[in-house]
Length: 189
Image (cartoon, rainbow, N blue to C red; front, side, top):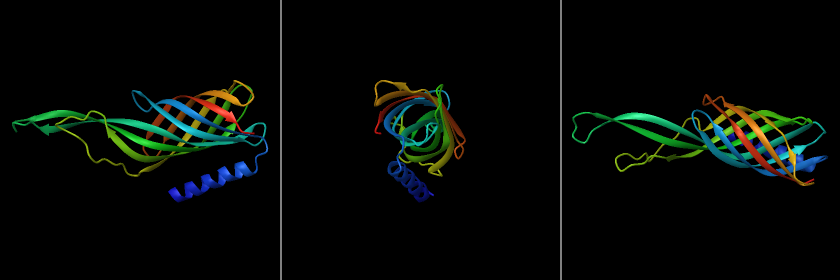
């Protein structure tokens, strides 16, 4: 499945560069997303190709993380009872969206599929008593649906800022991310 996704992305990126008729933009994106109680920071790089006045495609690579909290019972050192211990793990992902983008004077709307690839974890509340040394999830690739509503703000002829609201249910894991982002974009053509 990963090979199919990579091949599809390569074809889209090359075809959008080779057949560029309107506008191609590249940029960096900063996000604050939540899939639970707390907003988590994220960032990424993107490329967007506008092939008609109202239509385009958008893709990129984004870092995203998810905080997982679990409480376990452990035998106390005297062996006389159980002691609860909360473990906080931060799962790390690279997210790859493939989005159709509709441009209007009021707002832009992007919608399509997202692919999240698990890249590892960090044990947030390590202690001398308990440290998680190995952790993985199955499957390590998830599919979701992403929708974004954004409004470009022109800074000059080549530079834009585009704040966005984003909504991304990741179907495979049963998680729903929502949040805000801002993208600094540079117009190549």
